[in-house]
Amino acid sequence: MIQLLFRSKKKASALFLALTLVAIILAVFTGGFLRTPQNRFLIIRVDDIQDFAFREGQLFLLKQSVEANYPLSLAIIAGMFGQDAEILEAMQLAVASGCEVGVHGWKHENIANFSKNEQMTILFQAKTRIKELLGINTRLLIPPMFSFDSNTISAMHEESYTIISTCADLHEPSSISGIKNIPATVELSNLVNDIWQMKSIDAISAEAEKSVELYGYAAIVTHPQEFISNGQMNHIAIESYINLLVKLSETWQFTTFENLNLQK
Ligand SMILES: [Zn+2]
Image 1: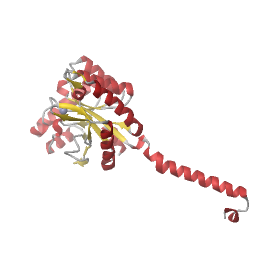
Image 2 (image 1 turned 45 degrees about the vertical axis):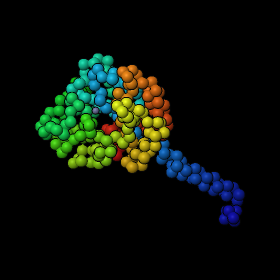
Image 3 (image 1 turned 90 degrees about the vertical axis):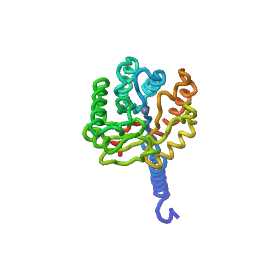
């Protein structure tokens, strides 16, 4: 048939080649290209960064992030941070290599229990402390116990915070009076009878897939204490976490809340 339309075999084969190229380009763009990690954003948020607590867990997470070259979003209890030289130094290195820092209260207080003025003081003190110790202007609030109220949102505006990150079980992603709410959507571990148990790699991957379908991103939350058991490093958890990162890096691009906010 093609030869009836075209006068020579040469033209027919040229057309065939062109169609094949178009098909390949379409396949690349609609199939493979759109599923590359560049379009699938994943955040790992580490809560409860502080002096002299679960140090081995904190130092492992911070050093591993620098060595394996992926960013973390680090939630600092600002009034309990800066005296522990080793933690401070590891934090400075992590920030220099691209980690993000957020405020996790001044003393891990439930900030919704405070007046707007008191909340403003907490937010101001915390960001000032972080600026002094780490040299960055944070605009990210990760409220302890995921608790906040309308005064928190007003206080955030006053103190130039732009993003709040809680937990998707309580607050779905949204914009609250101009503040971006980008919650964690996956918990790395379950707390069973006061013992942290890391979920399986398959379970975490499946939850992250569900999250990206629902919200367009995934954010895993963890705590340094999840890597400690009976006061010792939990080597099973550490190995599992490292394997998880290798698996996730195949199909996800690691990012921070601020960068995700810029992408949207
Ligand atoms: Zn906390």
